[in-house]
Length: 113
Image (cartoon, rainbow, N blue to C red; front, side):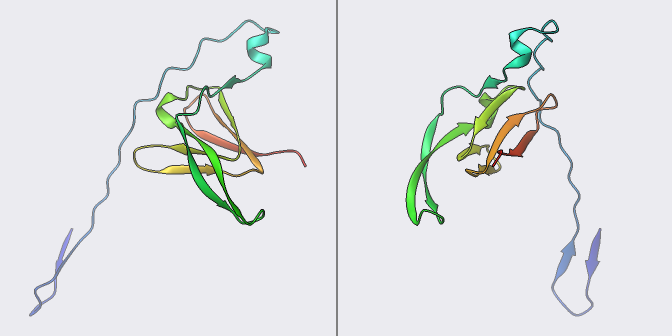
């Protein structure tokens, strides 16, 4: 869609873009009652760390950084942490844990008090 304003050298454009990113295949289901169902997969080794200002503590701390593309469905991360992607980053605070669901989405859940 293009709009022109008479007498003005200005144009406004409106775009709508949709896309999809290929997600890793979900792991095969384990038999009922198996240990694989009872314990979620850890995200593995962090790919680095980032300095972060913790306002509650009033100091800068190092928190682990995980690459999103390295996380398969079922992977879990305890906060605080950063999940980095090419387009964005997700901060998982100390009050939350995160896991990757079967659709490949990041799900954050508040830790028990």
